[in-house]
Length: 307
Image 1: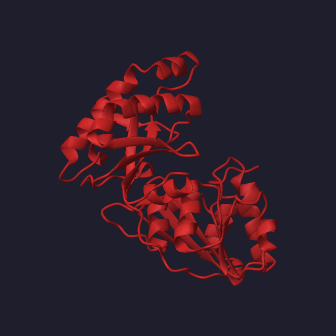
Image 2: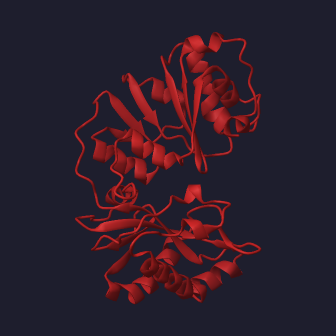
Image 3: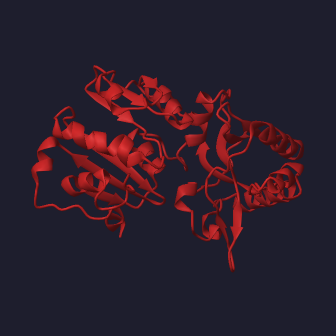
């Protein structure tokens, strides 16, 4: 099994033959643009995901409140991976109950979705802009904290969240078990639920496992189903266009990119479009079967496309 970023990988071969465009945007932002989500002032990722996650959204304003572990660097804090930190449901319930006991009087409510995702509900627009966490990893978080007219108030909220979580019994239990503490939340994807979009194309289906993509399909009027384990199950669908959200697992090259390359060679796919997210950057790739005959294009390491 080859690492996906090596020049011998199937992904590297696809990149070598296709038309590649690099965007200085996180993958989620690119997806939001492609689906025509409004940017006012964030993409309303939280509200769309929450509605598919068992939350009654209504007319409120929602933010994702991802549980995170802040790492102390030499002179700053950075976000530790993974984001969000995985928290057992019973532990998340206890943590959010403590936060709500403190913040409900201010009109703020922390909610737990069926998927385990954390959301922050506000009955009023917070008048801030936020940054998607994938764009912040490995950087000083200071420049990416909430900004805008009410930024000082929301920085105070985050400070209070951190103080409440610092001595929480759940974190003591997590650290005793060798797990990282949840010492803050990262706010992003703010907005209310946008008006329903007219159905895009009933010949298109969205196959994904994330709750955001499920909500996105509902909002865009697209059929949705969970992602099959194999590409062959996708190719058997009588649809000219299928959108897939691939899992980010260790054998992605063997499980998906190699079969995609083979399907292109066999002309089972007329055109393949890839959106590949790498933290704060995204590669957009378009490949047709005829492109595979461009023998003069040799494969190179995937990371070379990001420099």
